[in-house]
Length: 330
Length: 307
Image 1 (cartoon, one colour):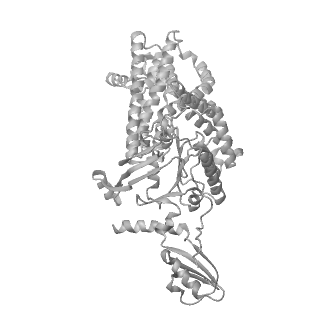
Image 2 (image 1 turned 90 degrees about the vertical axis):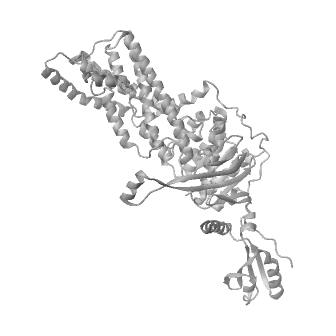
Image 3 (image 1 turned 45 degrees about the vertical axis):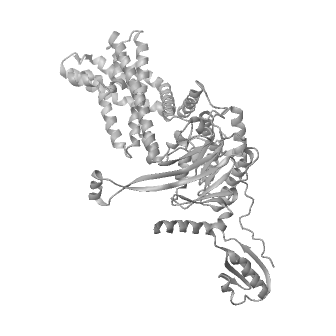
């Protein structure tokens, strides 16, 4: 049975259109103009227990709005969703005790108190038994290597340390569903990797179901098999991360190293993106790769060759671009 | 020759295959061994009270000084009323003798010690605007319950640490006071406790306006300035013309300063006292319910528009 289900989830915001100038502001007092913005448009998907799924999409695509609906912060304009068998925006205590939302740009800890005080408060808010609280806390502080920092006021911690504390606070009550909105935003590579490792390890141990949004493909590649791509509020892809290449990347990168200099006439197999000494990079259409390689190997002495998918970041960037231009054309 | 196996560059062991350790019945609402029941549900609010109390007690030096400074203006007030009484040539104004007047003004400080909620309304409005409100929506935590525990702790810390300076000040001013009878003391205590609830819930209601308007500081300023006067903090309501006195005595604001003071001074007794306390209890309930309704409506609006 699915642990998270969204069916035709939509959210339309009414945005007040402010007029320019003093006169405009005065007119706005009497006659307000609104614009309807479809932040999320009929999004449907299901997630099974224990999955780790990434939400990908450019800024303003509707990722965070979707997460907000799934966590019950806002209610949808239409459609339905179920998380752990609950309707999130009814905000049952029983539901809230079993999930957590971490927002990389929002602080949930008490700014002036040491993190350990916030943890104690969480223990009471979630009624966590003492033994479970201690063991979870030990486990998490060890995983993230922050045991020595819990007595320090949160405002004195670095961004990375604070994010780790946020993560600990979110996991203390052992949620079954964890929603992460850009948990590594603004962090250096070391802190990013530490948080990735913690999430991976924690997932392995507890089987928590995770939805993650991130702008860092590194996060996504390290953690998630399955991705949902959202552009302009619409779900445009739901499948394996590796499948993104098949679906969106029309070509592969072929790197050839010849024994002698690079021969002429390679353009007919695909676009040459780089020539360096005897090495050439070719972009070849996916379904012509076999044919092109056969022809080249027949005609020339090749020392080495590799075939790769283009970097995921590039593919994703193209998907985002397409989403944008589709929208503008419409 | 066959083309080589393609190797995607990102094949560094993703770990998101579903582990076996997941219980099959994970999607079931009532699988919650830690769910608190009955009285246990309120335990967390007591805990919040304790944590906040510890936090606030670190500022006790600040309290001590603040309490003394608060009474410095009292010296000028005493002189002012002295000259008012002298020049009027009357022994009592609005039923207050000069001694009673000074005692009244000192007592309103005690009332305000319970009913004033500095920063409560503004804090709620700010939480709504900057999104801190999310905390109460995501966690199994009630905002009003949380805030009342927090404020109660503030008050407890404030009252215990300022008891000593207050004792000194009241001892210095002892000649102004008539010692109330023993039956008045419990009524006074009840009126102060209810003053806390009225003060809290009223300010909470004002703060909830933040759900509908982004900027509430000027409104807050007006409400608080007005409250200083209509609660009787500045002078006893009896000094006003009859119409205004009657009007203000039928409004809830008097319970934040005037009413507890005159209970202590035994200007209201017997059946009138019981009725006064009952009305105070009514207003306390009224504002608590109103705050709840505004919160529920505000959240509905927040869910529809904001986030």
